[in-house]
Length: 507
Image (cartoon, rainbow, N blue to C red; front, side, top):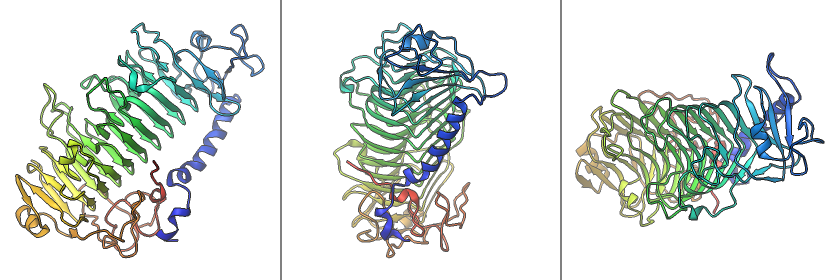
């Protein structure tokens, strides 16, 4: 089946993760039934508003009653605490450590998910409410299928750190958040710079005062800060608090060894959908719309840390700027950008929102001493906006080819000079082999699927000659695979239609 049938199919993400959820649910059920690792506990504790903290808590007919009782319990690795689904609990949750292969798990039982409103932080810092408060060094924790909702207006926080999750003391590691919801907080997750090994999957972050999730927000040069997997999540309506004027982002990460993949990130009052500050990061297959900038990089890394940033197969729609690579972080003591960037197979369609970020263009590179590869992208600036902006030639070299500029009158900015034709830009830069210049009218879907039609000139017009990357001609439903003689330009392969190409934006 080809593109014409896409609209009637379920969303790519729901199809992609449905089987996983079923299997995961069965596995969790077996684990909670007592199939634990030898030498660890598998006790399950239940919590219900109709229970009593004097109960044993080990059966759903004799549950505990309060979050406070959970926090004071002596849990062992492998134990689980389940809150009654559909019920609301007050108090900040303070998890205990598990062990490698035997985490302490917090979740729901019965029908639906339990909601935790949070409460004053137990650390005495005056942050109230906080949904989850982690003591320093807590590790091997799973938070699954819970809702953390302060019930407050996120536009009216006057102090920081009223967060859904906050590990104020840091050094936490091996945490998993799966199928959770964080709503009405200052930040959904606020993870310290000396923590590491975090996995966040299939979760929802909505109505946030500042950022959706923050990894190393306030300690950019601390130890740890490595190994983050952030996949299959939805972030919406962040940056709602007018009391704070700094950049507000959907995902903010200063960590290394990071994968940000297959997320839907949309609707903010400022900042970037994804903003990363350290190298060795992959930002792949995300749908980002209605923010100031889609994806940005500002270098916080010390000069000793040199790596790559891969930005691929993303769809960026209705933003003022598309992808922006800044010279540095703009803060005192930071150094010029010294990372290398690979920007391939993205679809970017900007809008004139009045934001100053529109000066970045659909793809903009201010400077880096590393190399920059820009290939196979569809770049659709709004009328009068620069399609491709290269302020300074990257120290490690620029390689731009097989991109599709699809606006009636595109502009190119190259090293201080503006060019109004593709030929003049190519002559000045020595770049642009295989570039296309034609309007997309009738050739790319008008909605956020960005699915190509049979008349799209980008079909089989991409290149696999990109340093450090490889494609497979397998017609698989994943990035870096293609049908035909070469990859298509853009994030969506024409045939067969990728699952993600059906994931539409709403609102």
